[in-house]
Image (tube, rainbow, N blue to C red; front, side):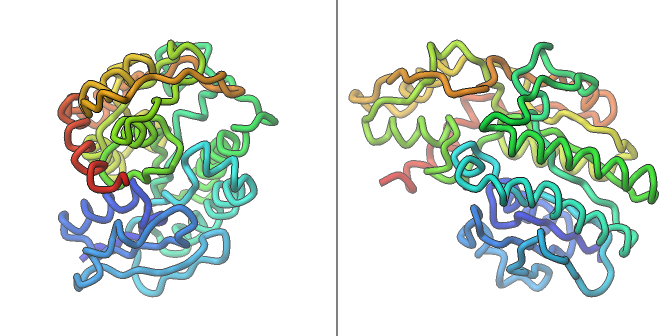
Length: 312
């Protein structure tokens, strides 16, 4: 039985990855320090014979006894509210954490997939964003701690691949949504659902014309799984190219929830907020045979069912 280590296992994406690899017949070792994750996301896995949980901070030396075939590095604060509150931890997990896990992969002869982000493109001057675009990032702005942590993550991963011959994979993740997102994580979708359910104003920054592209979590996990098992070591965008303005997205949420008190509340645009975000997924289609399958209305209904139970 193949063994896989998943860091950030108690987070939104990490927990869904644990589920997928359990279903695929792997022995899964989940690791998290619960800085932003929650054991509630993986407690259903605890009784299983082929699941282990290590409470550990990957910025410190990482040891996993025995054989290890794959590592998926998903440990990191991932929303602006988190990385603005924890800037040093965000930089450390992108730098020291990635270094430690690449060292573990080298020692074990394991293949490692690291979670990068569309934020490496910054506020892009190219649209849609292709993997060969180098980005437009402000390294000293408020979002720089996350953007540059992930850019460093990519650079050190390529260095371990080129210098040490480590089997590496890099996924650039675009906006993803689905059950197990934190209600208070500060990203648009959880905030909109919480505000709409409570009958509050949905916070839209600027005039809401900035765009995002939302991918349902099951589609994303499928893309990550295919990338891990592929032979491609350069970065690959995984996301849904179906682009929508934030204002139109807020209106969709209001329509779905149906609370007559919900409305749009406009606020000033934060510094360095990307104006556009849309993945070019030509590479994922060609190399992985992957593209998203879940239409946004279907994914939003599933996500709404989750938030109805969570929002008080």
